[in-house]
Image (cartoon, rainbow over all chains, first blue to last red; front, side, top):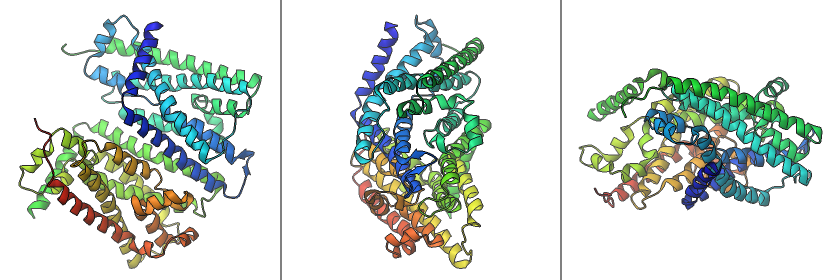
Length: 262
Length: 267
């Protein structure tokens, strides 16, 4: 455990070296959120509530979901690069789990972006526009827990797609397409309240809702009591399913791996 | 004529390079297409619910977007190497161009057409145009077709001109990537939607500083005449095709002036 914490910390510190990166990342997050806030402000026009959803709730959804989706990005070509240049064999020789190392480094990077890109952007956004406060302190705590589960769902989906680089020439295209699906269906670009009903029903059968929308709903108090517990169980269920699926691909891939030369 | 032959040869080479990996290239082009469609899908779904955004309906929005994608398809095939020009300088690859008997900008423009991105953006632009052009009430006659063609050329030159200006800055500063990211890529996120939905500051930037408004908003206004045009001087609609040519010309002068200062990074 200590080793992996160390990995996460190293990555976090590595990122700290580039000050410009901090500034650019923040601007990027801020502008991305601002564009969508302006779009929805114009869409709402003079209306204050649409389908029981206020503009303030929409703004909250964007700040959390879109802001976090900017922070929860990592190098998804990592495994492919390791396989392409054959250095993945070195990883197998080390006395640490490759998967856990990947996860902890990605978490370290994600944490950096949450602290230095997301928080400043969040504060600046709040100066410009009103967002909802968490329903209660407990809701905030559960939201943070649920956010972490959401991160795991997101990471495991990425992991599965990355393992396909054992078979494919390049996974860039598939990773990009996967991210479009995640961005749209997780509600980070379009609040899921406004999805057409059939599409919404479909989404509730996929892991996408578990990524950002569940934490947002907990934060806003749309879920409470047992419903929070249920939603988090669903998140855990997806984590289990995705973990097992990823493991199958990983095992098959490692078996198939042939590295030329050395 | 020699120039044209080199241009065609160079384009053929770019295509051949990509065709070495056919399946991968096809998947990559599809990925670009889908990635860029994301914003379209999102606004489409939003308008199913809300119907209009500042009086623009869904077809008008698609038309507005189509201009952005169509022009960008040309921009990435012509100005691909200028996108990351600071790298070209830092790695000393620029010196190679200086010893060749052709204009520097000419060589850069021809180098490395990004065919994949071009196909992805272009296909999307054409589809959006075909879907929307018949449904937004534009009378397609000689005048509008000429204006439309001019506006596409202007839009390409406008964005090409911006790339040239950012590239020229590389002669003064080692690292210009962030300036370009802020002023081009970040501002581009605002383009695509009617600029009237933004706060005044953003509108001013989009019109006067990073003039994306002349790439799609004002041209679309000329053809569609939406009520939100009332906030802006009417002349901007007529200027749109020429603004690009002007920016490109200024960019070219700035480039000529800056190249003289070039000192190699050495080694």
